[in-house]
Image (cartoon, rainbow, N blue to C red; front, side):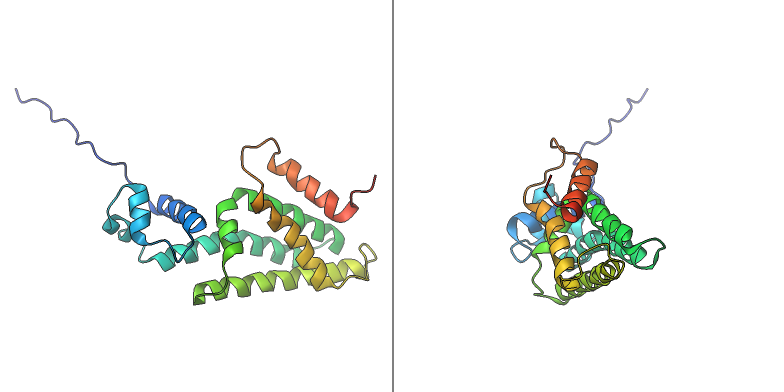
Length: 198
């Protein structure tokens, strides 16, 4: 009676999501220009052809990473721009949701904040970020017209300050720490809109 053959053992397989996670990590640690497809393959313990089986290029990985960082944020800001309710409430919602998006996609947002426009993909990401600033500034201007926020601050400056507060989280927030994303988002909104004065 023939003996059953034992299954061949080998390296676990990786899908496109695994490769993207690894690429984002390396882009953040080594810089995009300092990372090659060979580096990504070595980090995963596979040959370069295994990477190319899933993605066509390093540029494709950068575009996917920046899309991950921008798509949900863009959807949140655009929804707030056209939804019903006071501009002030919608502005607060955008800030709170932005914190939650950042904490969920921290590595991708970190990468987004480091791009400098050195390639068409990076230039497009910067254009999309500017568009978000403009929409948030418009929402701030509407809230100011309602009398809900100060009207002596340029809406563009206010927008950049609000997003700047949220973006600063990439410098110190770590998932799994003592502060949950929801608590952090609430604290950010209270600080931004109510201040620190007791």
